[in-house]
Amino acid sequence: MANNSGQLPPQALEAEMAVLGSMLIERDAVEKALDALSEKDFYVDAHRRMFSAFKSIAERGDGVDVVTAGEELKRLKMLDDLGGMSALTELVNKVATAAHVDYYARLVKEKSILRELITTATNVVSACYNEAKEPTEILDEAQASILKVSERQTMQGVIEAKDLAHEVIEKIEQAHQRKQAVTGVPSGLKDFDRMTTGFQKSDLILIAARPSQGKTALALNIASNVVLSDKPVPVLVFSMEMSKHAIMERFIASQARVNLQSVRTGFFPRDKWTDLTNAAARLSEAPLFVVDRSNMTVMSVRSLARQLASDLKRKGKSLGLIVIDYLQLMRGSSNRSESRQQEVSEISRGLKGLARDLDVPVIALSQLSRRPEEKGRADGRPQLSDLRDSGALEQDADLVAFIYREGYYKRNDPTVQDKAEIIIAKQRQGPVGVCEVKFYHQFTRFVDADPTGEAEEGPPPAEMQETQTTFP
Image (cartoon, rainbow, N blue to C red; front, side):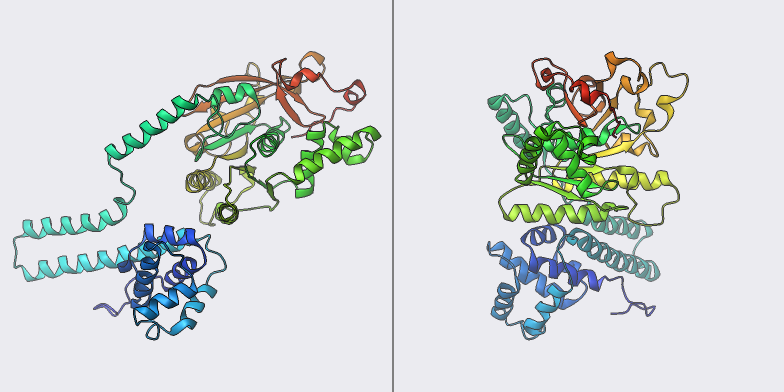
């Protein structure tokens, strides 16, 4: 219905249909839509009635789909009035996936709030023209009305302290009973896990370094350690720089401990073939997923991650970790950013939102500025101020880790060639400090520096040391 000016009220009809269509094809979408919207948020009466019917089905514990929705509307004697089964089918055809239901629901909610504000403001204007009440009384009612509209979006998710305290004390009790040093997803590096207690759900982890320091190698090492552990969890790797075949080549060479350059050229010892095929066999059975697209946006990353998470959930599994290589190769969701700094800030916030939304740790790799290599730096070790493009990276990240390899700067000193440091420069829930590790660049593999751990196998054979190639 048009207002007095002849304009139609704010509305998002396509988004309303997309919400309803998403609810018909995925159970998770039903929960998200019901959490975000109510019947009165829909502009079209038919959409309000359908949403109410879908809500009734869900509250009974039944699944919402075209068949159950049709039966419910038929029971309520509304099916024919709303267009019959063909109307429900049309809703399903409106969306290819339910991955964007949050975005659709937000559009619907925003238009609903705007319509309510228009109604409230119109009533205030009418009261002012009528002058039937004192100005102070009109002002007080206007403030109360606006506050009521505001509460529609701010009260959602508010939890009383008594409920929150009960939940937290239960978690503390469980931790006390388990007494586990690593409570999150382990990296496979003992000292690093001791300092971080593993990667925690909903955390954004930033691994940053100058080029050729090994950030991609570290991230892929962590991913392989997770999927090949005694208790593997699914890992999703987004590579915006390397192809999926190059990524898997690295995984296999690293696990087999075969020189990556010799694998690429084919000049590897014949007796290493068994190690390579065994590594490939293990990885083929691992819950590892790879996406190799360039110029991805946060929205496209979110969409693919959501789809995989939903698919895993239907199989009784949970996505355990997301790795993004690397942040500076991503694009913002729009082209309206005035600067690269603003665009990176948008990406940073989006990745933190992704971690919270899917409740999984997200590891994002990042380039550092040239400042660690500038004259005047005592040793070239990176600092938080070296994060490239945006201070939002430091702000949004829950954990920031830098890679520093002294041997990269002292290539003629054989005593430091395999030494590396993972510098924890920021950690919201834990200490900062340095973890000593070893980096075998021939295998693009980080291992524990502790002689009782994996590194006790010693350095690579002498024949492999002759052709040292640096890999990022």
